[in-house]
Image (tube, rainbow, N blue to C red; front, side, top):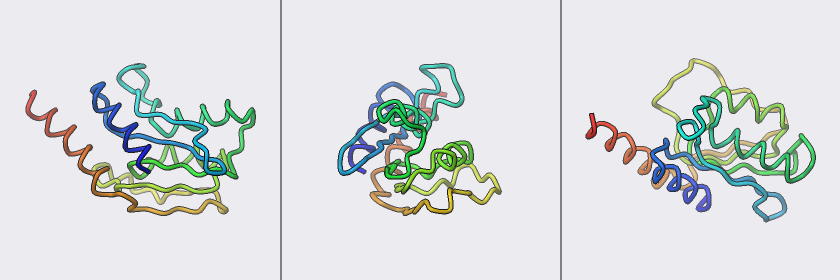
Length: 138
């Protein structure tokens, strides 16, 4: 999770919403990313989506059932959908998503294990920093 927080810091440094993600297989990071929605002008360029693509490319396979995603913020419904189709083995997230309530129960793949609240405080701190900075600029 510390590596995901480092990715989130990279996002913050670029003016992106500070969410970072890494995907691990057998103790090795095979993909890392952070939000790139502003940089790429792409609303789908979430950290998780970028990491899923990078991991699939690394493995040469679309299924990530032996992998664990570490992400600093609970995934949104779009990312949960992509994680479902990738059949990710585990999802570990830091902060709970409280800003956007989608009234949608996340549907991960039935075999996916989900753990939340890991290093929640530093993950939340980056998000708060970002929005405080945005408010001060307006």
